[in-house]
Length: 177
Ligand SMILES: Cc1cc2nc3c(=O)[nH]c(=O)nc-3n(C[C@H](O)[C@H](O)[C@H](O)COP(=O)(O)O)c2cc1C
Image (cartoon, rainbow, N blue to C red):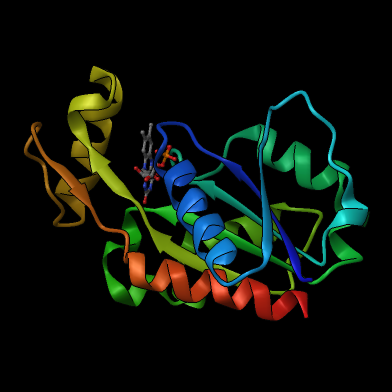
């Protein structure tokens, strides 16, 4: 039976929610799926999995350093399996920026990571001003002002295309075959 591992980094919980939706969808298709949060103390038994995806949210134009540390440490294990990387960011609220070649954050990951993913995906994330610290809120409002995005400090907008998340989850099953 195809078994998929999804490794993720989430600051505010939205990337975690996306990975949970993927895992549920994969299990609904009768396949196995485990989630691993970067920073968890437990060990991964890589032998259990037929494909692996790594996903992370974008924070100030890049990814948490623990994401790069993880993919560098496990580069060999990642490379021996069908693999995929997905980037979660709000610039991707614009459909054009969901095309990997047009998403600078995805390109940045490929450039900075020792592991070069065989397959990539861009997923639009969530704006959640009320839950962000004043400094983050202020900075992101500034970025949004420059890119014609929402600036209302009360705005909570989920840009994720959940249907497409399911399609990607099925794609990960396909990679595992
Ligand atoms: C501190 C901070 C910085 C962010 N910087 C960017 C950014 O530079 N570009 C972008 O497109 N999205 C940026 N975002 C948006 C996040 O990528 C988006 O909210 C994502 O859904 C967060 O996922 P998480 O809840 O798993 O942390 C930022 C969010 C936060 C909180």
